[in-house]
Image 1 (cartoon, rainbow, N blue to C red):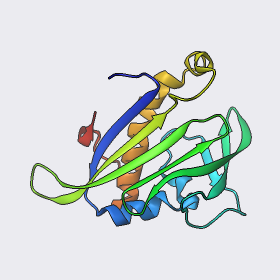
Image 2 (image 1 turned 45 degrees about the vertical axis):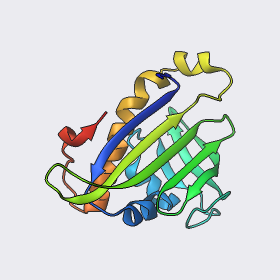
Image 3 (image 1 turned 180 degrees about the vertical axis):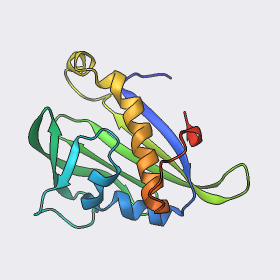
Image 4 (image 1 turned 30 degrees about the vertical axis):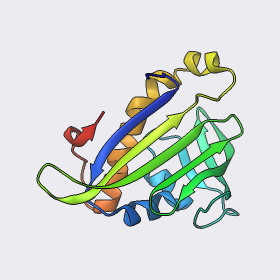
Length: 162
């Protein structure tokens, strides 16, 4: 079933799920891997590492500076992590051990922006979120790959899977 309020992208990353999960579970690294360029920093009083039910704040900027409080709503160590904020959007990452076409071991990382339960969906459409999020998710996965690889070079866009 195709639902425009659930945007999902995948990318194979040559690292184990536990390595990738550590990056995702560390709020201080979210600004490093954010493909939307809106996440600026973790708020200082939040947890250093996320866990089930953890609440953490982020410093954001989308035309103006603002703060957002998130709650971890899905958590399976090394496999799945998701958080939502007051408006109800869920940012989800699912990690599956995998191998690429060459037989190289790694992880198939799925990132999802899930707004299926958000009220006021027409606002999301008008604000352009539905158009922007596919590219933002792809950029985030590329930055995550780049960070984990530690290469500091541009990620190969040809490795993005839809």
